[in-house]
Every structure is written in C-alpha cells, then in structure tokens.
Length: 180
Length: 109
Image (cartoon, rainbow over all chains, first blue to last red; front, side):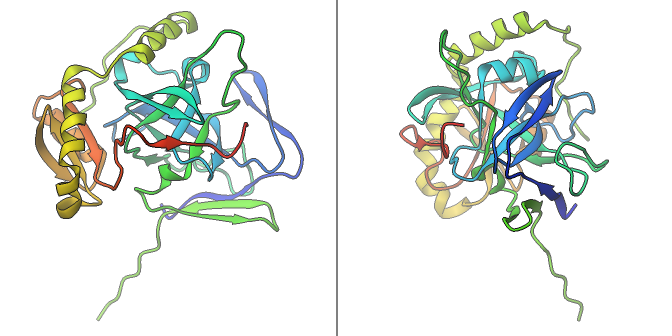
C-alpha cells in the first residue's frame, strides 16, 4: 500500500464534517483525515470500529490528542481495552496518556470525506494517545482530535502538502529494488 | 497465528462509557506497567546504544523481547500467555517516556 491518503483536499474556506449526525466546523486550511482508534496489539482493524475526523497538525509534537468527550462518543472502545500510561501536559493542560494506536483511513482520491476500499493503515504510537479531560464550564479542547507528526515517524511515512492545489498525500517510503 | 484479546463485552451507552473512561483517566498505570515504564526509563541509555529504532517489550522490570513492530511484539507476548496488564511495549528513541517532556499543538483549534 504505497499511497494511503491520495490527493486529499483542504479548503480556503470554512467547511464541516459530520460525526454521528452532528456537524463540526473545519476552519480554512485545516487538513482533515479520517482515523479509527484501537488498543495496541491488534493486527487488523475490525470493520465495525467507527472512524472519525482528526486534524493533521504538523505542529503538534504528541502522537494524537483527543478530548475525553470525543473518546467517549466517537471512538466506540470499551475502557477495559485501554491501559493508562501515566500523565503528561499538552499546551499546559494536564492530560492522561493511554495505550492506544491510530488507524489512518485511505480516502477516495480528490475527496476528503469519502473512502477507498483499501484497508486502514496502522500507526503504531510509541507512548499512546493523550486525552484531555472534560472540565465543567470549559469548551471542548481540542475542538477536533489532533494527529501529530510524531504519529507518522515510526512508519516513516511521507507527507506531501501541495499548497497550490490544496491537496495532501501520505504514502509509505519508496523502496527501490535492484536486480543484478 | 493472530491473537486477539477481544471478548464479547456488552454494548454500552454513552453515559456508561463516559463513566468507565473517567475512571480510566484518573487511574495510575497498573503496577506491572508502571514497573515496566520505570525500568525502560532506567535502561534507555543502554538501549539507545544497542537497539535504537526497535521496539522493546517489558514484563515488569524484565526485557522480554525486541522487534521491528509494536504489534508483532504484543502478539508474541499474547502467545506466551501474557495480558495487557502484564506488559509494556516501548520504542527505543531519545527522550522516550520522558516525564518532563513538553507537548504543544499548533494553536487553539
């Protein structure tokens, strides 16, 4: 599977994504990819595991940051499958790290919210995900989950952002074979 | 052989799921995993010399395997009868599991 995300568009205007029949704003220039989340150690993604949008945030130096409410309502995982890995801080907020991995869903080329029939690509996350707890009276932060650049490193993926065409591609590293 | 730890757990409502997740977020790592994290932090300088760029599995303070993928190591541990409460799989890289690491995001999204 050399190309995972192919010609995925981002926009110079505000758009929206639908999750569980609710609409969420995507601000201009934000790159949305669709992901699933599972416990570590799963070799395949079950077809019934929900997918949800995340912002590809190359300035985020954690693997994956998600608000507690999105973990509850969007991810569809039993807490029994997750293990805490301790606490840390993201942008000054105390967060919990959980042992979990992210699966990146291939898109239909040139479409952001339509999917190809190819299998999702597993991103093995060294220290799991960061979950920002709900605090009464405070807005949900982050507004949408964030997929950081670090999540792509172990797989050595290549990300190409074409700012002229407003398109993004993610692929596995090229392998060259020489025959003598 | 693929080993999958999933069992048939009942469907949960969002409220039930929220309660379980809240408990999880407030919990400390299971004792065996905490021992593994502590041991990994202690071993990291030597691991960086011998196994940088590899995954390592710990059972308590014992290294029990190295591998090219995290999933492969988990599967190997499950085959040996270990469970998620028994093991921790870490990536050997500088700063791994550094308790003082600062994380940031691009902006208030």
